[in-house]
Image (cartoon, rainbow over all chains, first blue to last red; front, side, top):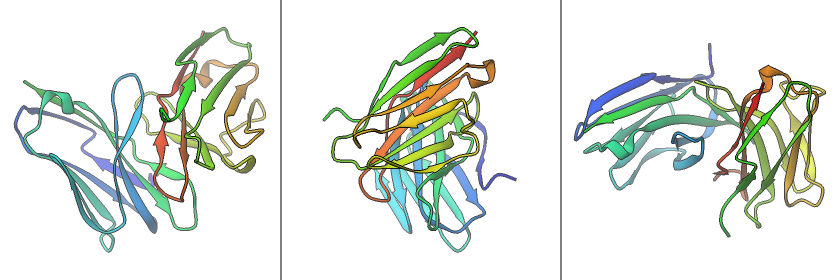
Length: 109
Length: 112
């Protein structure tokens, strides 16, 4: 079992729909990243969370440390949001990230 | 500063050849990380440097792999005697503090 699990693996939605991507982890963490990866490979950090909730534009990320769970929400989804979204965690006392396998999101116009 | 730069973006090589990739981190970042990502998977940790010191290496980093960061600035990742299983995206990231990664665009290696 991976230390970081994401669901769903693939998600296709119509433009304008509200999107939720989930991340569960099994280890104690000090922080969690949500990352976006477009075709071609480059990764962009969207959020880094250690508690609560963060919002940036149409993106919202939440984390529940007790339940070891985080969600990424996209409101009013747009085709340009189509990408792979990856959850990654910092384990306690560890400088490296452990990544989930990603959620491939496709928004249809 | 234009962020983390990786070169080349793509590399196609024949099995058995040696390849070297370069990563130029953000100049004030003292931590530099290498990750490998195969198709459909999340990135996996290979190694990381704090300044010029290589502080951790994954068991994924076989004897054919070596990484350096000689002056605590840019880093190179060399793969000797490449195998088809080495085909992957090699990602570099840097950070100043413990958190707050900035990723490069990656080098996609194809071994034929």
